[in-house]
Image (cartoon, rainbow, N blue to C red; front, side, top):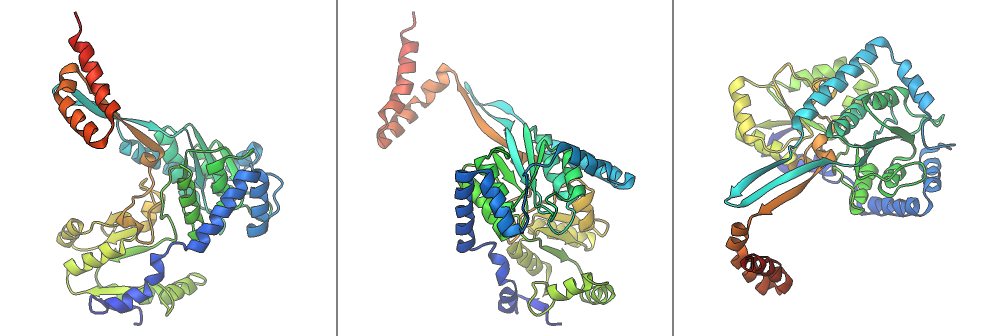
Length: 405
């Protein structure tokens, strides 16, 4: 099988097959994105409308979906799908509430109190790339996470259909999850509007959402303008740590119906990125996975092998354990996030949850004795760094204390 590789004996051949995965976007893409950001900053809604016509081929009359239309989208959900949406929202909310950071203060030394105060962002913009079809799960995960965090305003952006409207099921899910407003338009332009603000699209403090290279570059551009984001949420990838894989894969490809069979044949064909990696032992298998840093990792092994693998694997967006935990369960029903870092970004970043919709202020409080105790440290550092006012800030306070009657 051309897509089978022995690790590490065939490391170079495998790395050549996976080389494209190491580049999420290039300099030219980022420069084009930055130009569009400048245009949106300068011309507002008009720039978003023009970009949508140019890149999406859709002439929009307005950027914001009418409330009545969104209500109709909700009513058009079948009873069974509505029930599934409500269940998914409940599960995602339960998980995100459990993950929220806590505000806390505690005494670290005599007279010294430190801590953190966690607060939600005032507003977030969420991009849902539902161009090819419904993407309810992503809308639910991101909007519900924002609501669980306590974000004040949640604006959802989606690509337009040829009729200028959004995918109805995705719009319905976003609204049910708690979106305040839904807008349509070109993805990069909408993200630029989240970062800059226009007449129709409010400026937000955070911008989140998956997508291809251009969208990923737009998230970086938003961060350059001081917006909180989660980089590296690009084209999806996954890995499975298991045994007896090759024969199962052959059978699945052969039994798949079009167009799914064509997709699988492309992924595992000569120019695809799919591969079966055969490692001589668990240590080498885990070393490969840590280097690959998959977005999704499924471990389907004997219990002892699973325990040992978990000790060794450090880099994965999510880890699903056991034969009864398919990727689809995590994407749709468990409640854990499936908006995860791709393209090896899992070596440094995590999936998007309510924690990303919040920020933390550190807290410190000293009493007189504690300030007096660290005054020599303040004086020495202030003198070395040439910041005399820093020294004075401590000395003046202590002098006033000494002069008390």
